[in-house]
Structures are given as structure tokens and as C-alpha cells.
Image (cartoon, rainbow, N blue to C red; front, side, top):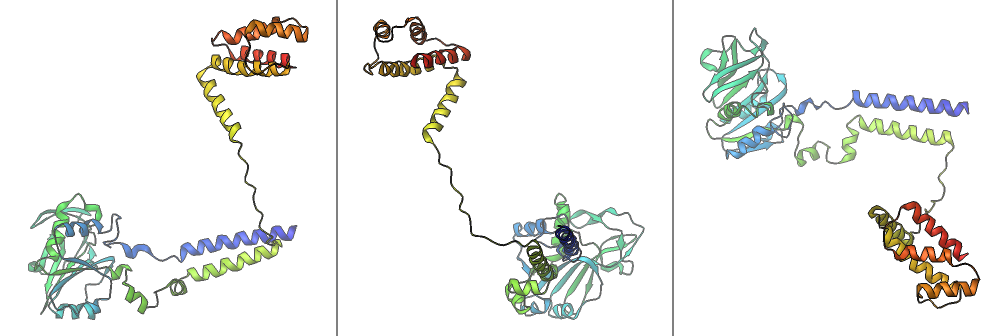
Length: 359
């Protein structure tokens, strides 16, 4: 008995450790910040819907940027980062710009300035709300698109073939600004300056097309589990389950078929009807119906026919066949013919008298 309890305690501790590890090693969901699939406050689902309503040729891109360089028509790529990235461009981004395309990056690293966290900035589309103290003070004045005396918030750099626009805040037109239409319109003006095709990078948020997942070995559940800590957790849980079954010496027996209870429809109907009559206080109806049936049963017990007899005729035959005083029978017969409501106690007494008469 002590050994069994110790095994149970060890199993409980192991389960607790597994649960804690599953939370610690769980994938970081922060990469979904800034995604157009997200409806959270830091997502961009509302802005994406806004752009579609404007008739903008906008498309989610769920492949590496290197696969996007094959586009022949100039386009704009919008990249919204969940964590601040450096201003320097990658080789894929430079190749994208060299094709004559544009690049808009929200969420680049910059120093924290003395500016207030919440500020209102003037823009070509009106006042824009900004929630960041980060400013880039090394930007040339002619390159600043949005900023104040503390430095640039949004700026652009002209390259040989294309243009790149930076923003120190990744929340320029996030879902939190749904009531601030100017924020939505301002970002729209940044990405649609030349009416190019617009691509929103969802690959950096973890979204991948089926062919990309297949090429990276993520096309099925087994390969996905093999690349995540979840596989180790499942193996540990399986081993623990086997140990617990063995320690308890449990065996699987033959399946037991449960018997379906038989429903008595007549009884159920009677009970339902009785409930309705009781709620309606229809004791006069009960007196009439039960009284007729009791009289017929009494006549059968006396050896008479089942057709209800006249009141006085039944009293005479009762006296003739039983030799008893017909007063009690006269009382119960008169009560059922009055056709008026009586109390529940009187109804029970009346039924008891009928039972006594039949016995």
C-alpha cells in the first residue's frame, strides 16, 4: 500500500514538471505581433481590411524575400517587425531594392529620447498618434517624413533603384488605432506612393505557404512534432502512463454493455397528466373520471354489469348483495356528482372511502 502511494506521488510530481516545462519551452507567440492575421491590439488585421476596402492591390506574402525578387513589375514590400531590428538591410532586401522596388520597414532600432511617449504628429493626411519615445537623430532633415525636435520617427532613404522607408514604431497603424483613421491613411500613403503592387510580409510572422513548409520538412504532423519540444513531452507522458498502469496492476477487461432502462409510457403519461391536473386544480374533473371508474369496478365486484347504474338502483343492489348500510356509498356517489372543486385532503379521504368500499 505504501509503495502504491509513493508511485502515485512520484507520478504527480512528474506530471507537474512536464506541465511547467511545456510552458517554459512553448514557442514564442510574440512573432505574431504586427501580423495582418492578428486581431489583437498590436496586430494589423483592421488595417489590411481597410486597404482592401480602398481597392488597393494588396497581398500577403508567405515566402522568403528571395522568392519575391522574381516579380517583373515594381512593387512595395511592407515588413512589420515584432521586435526592433537594425536599420542595416539584408542581402535579400538589397536585391529587392535593386530591382526598382520599394521597401517599408516598421519597427527599427533607435535610441529613447526625451520626448513624451504619446505624441500627436502632423502629417500630409492630418494628425497622427504616435506611441513611442524612440527617435533617430542621425537622419537628414530632408529625409524625415514624420518627426519632431527630438528626431525622426519615419524617414526615407533613396537608393539607386528603389526607396526604403523606416519607422521607429511598429504600431503605426495597428488595430489599437482603429478609431484613428489618419493613422491608417498615413501608412497607406507610405506604401502606395507609386501605385505599385503591395506585399505584406507574413513569412517573418511564421506564416508559410504549403510548398515552403513541405520543402522545410513541416508538411505533416510527424515532422512538425519532431522539430518541437512537444514530441519529448508526448514521449514522457506515454512512458509515465505505462508506469502508472503497471504500478497499479490494472488490466483491461471485457467491455460491459449497459442496460437501457425501459420506459413505461403509460405511467409517464399518467404522471404527466396528474401534474397538469394538480397545477390546474381540476379536482372536479378528477372526481368525475375516477368516480365513474370506481363505480364500474364496484359493480363488477358485486357481479353486476359494467354499464353505470342509476344512483338509487346501485344503492338498493348494494344493500341486497352485501347487507350493509348504503350511507357511506351514498356519500361518495353524491360527492362526485356535485361537480365542484374540493381540497386535496378531501380528495384523498374520498379515494380512501372508495378503497374501503371495494375491500
